[in-house]
Every structure is written in structure tokens, then in C-alpha cells.
Image (cartoon, rainbow, N blue to C red; front, side, top):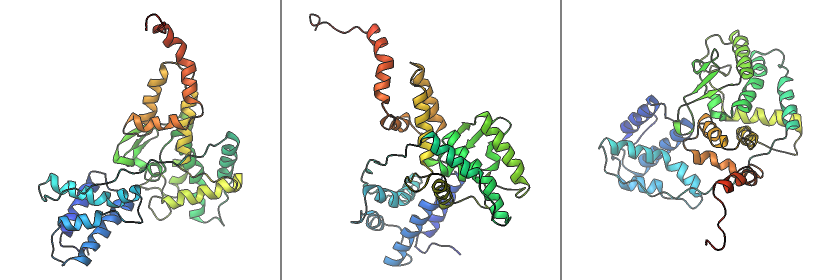
Length: 323
């Protein structure tokens, strides 16, 4: 039985099938909001009423309780649905105006090496509860899962949804198919991480010989966002107490910042490495990676120190007479 009740439910189902077939369907975000839109239309208009401009405009109107960002997120599915219909000449509905989302002011946590060492020791010290199967799987999985984030800078969602078939353990290459923005990209693992992933794959195969996901729960599904964050918080507090409260996603920021800081002695090779980092992290544009300039301590000063002398040799300072 369909979960949709509006007069255009069939078009919604075809839209979802299309997005899923193209690997660009985000169920937690798109699925919930397109369902809420459908029910809104069914409840406020006659059941047989076709999609109209009024429906879209009413649903997409910004609410008093919304920020620009939350409004953008809530209406994203409907706007994508309208674009899908317009491209197929199935509607002439005009896309509603949107407000530019506010700038992200969140500052990621700055890990220090001792904190991270204690955290990974806590991961390695997990004891299965009474030998239960799910608890044993958790003991095997968490140390590898968080080390993968730490060593590659992968998004937590990418690691959660990682298919077993997308991990080439012979070459040490991960194929990221499901990512933010749905941009497929590849991540090359360090040899030590490839070795750990191979050992994990062999060990977990005894419990889950036909798993679909590389990190698969005991019920045969991928892990949830809450599973990642709950386990991260529990292990972090065990290792470092409650004085600090980073989130698992901060590991990705740490990866980017650590790499950038290591390149400050590389002169003009910096730009090439920055491009590689952007591609590896799955950023759609180099501008997304440049965000880390603002959170790397003294990066702009360091770049000036490393490049200013060479630049002045090439382009001498203009004297007062020449001005």
C-alpha cells in the first residue's frame, strides 16, 4: 500500500523511483519531507486535486519558527520534485523563492594527540557483553570504523553506507557512491589502514559472511547516525571525561586541518596538494575546501612567511618615484 494520499501520489512515486535509480535519494531528509508535503496537500485539498501552484507556495512559505537553513532543508525535496516535473514538461509550476541559508558558524573541536590516543585505546578496550553476537560485532567494528574516519577524512554517512563491494582491499581504494551532494569519488587508504580493513573483513566474515554493507549491523542493515554519535560520545567520555564534547564529524575536520598544516613547508606544491585533498574529501568545488583556511591556526600568516620573499624577487616593490 502506498504511503502517499494526494491526487498526484503517482508522480511522487515515480520521482522517488527515479532518484533512487540514479543513486541520489536521501531518505532521512527527502523521504520525510516529501511525505509531509503529500499529506499536507491531501488534508487541505480534495483527494483528487492535482498539484497546483497554491499547494507549492503554501508549503514552501517560510514559517516564523524557521531559520533560512531549516526552511531550505524542509523545502528541498519539493523543489527537486518540481524541477523533475518541469524537465519532463509535466507541470508549469514556478519554483518558489528561497532564502540563502545562514553561514555556518560552527567551529569544529580541536583535538590534541593525547586525547586521540586515549580515545583509540578506549575503542580497543571494548569488552563484549556476555559474549552476545551484537556486542562482539560492536567490539570488532568500532575501532576500525573510527580509524577509517581518522585516516581518510570520510564523512560519517559515507562510512555508514559503505558497501562491501565498494572497498577494494587489494588496491586499498574505496569507491564512495553515496555522499553529500551525491558526488561519487574515490579514497585511497594508507597501507596500514588497508591492512586493518582486511583483517576486519576476514574476522567479521565469520559472523556476517554475506553482508551488503562493509560495516553492517546485526540485523543486516547499515548503522544509523545515532549509532555513530552515541558510541563516539560514550567512548570519548570514557577516555577523556566530560569536560569536552566533540562530535564524530569533527574527526573529518581534524583530518583536513592536519593535512593542511603539514604542507606549509611545501611552497608552490601546496596548491596541488590542496586540489588532491579537495577531491579525496568529496568536495564539489575547491571553495568548499577553502573553508579550512579560516580554522587552521595562523595559516594565512604561515603562507605569507613561506611565499612573500619569493614573490618579491619576481615582482619587486615599486619605488616612490615609479608610482
